[in-house]
Length: 107
Image (cartoon, rainbow, N blue to C red; front, side, top):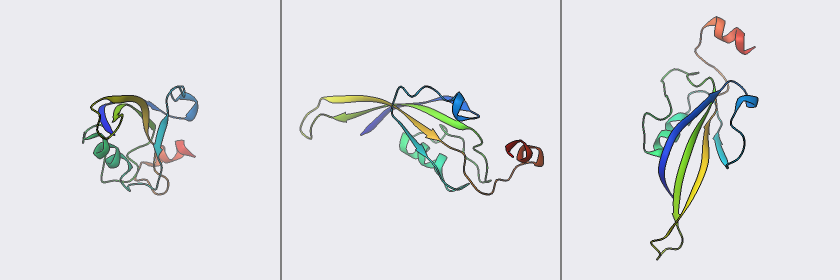
């Protein structure tokens, strides 16, 4: 697979505000500050696509990225099949280095 295009689509505060499920989506879930956003940047070969930080809790919304990728029809073919899908960067769970007011909003 080769990612041809990766672009930010939307940040949603909750599931109801996410884009409609008209494409396959692959989400990264895990503890705070383990590298979910960095992994998205690495897969898309764009270190500025998903915002990263050394402090836990940087990702606070559900972030959707629009992806266009291609795969060869066969090993010997130059023809490719194009796929469109979403990559989703979810907030980490566990400790987050945020203000008290932000923490209260989450509760």
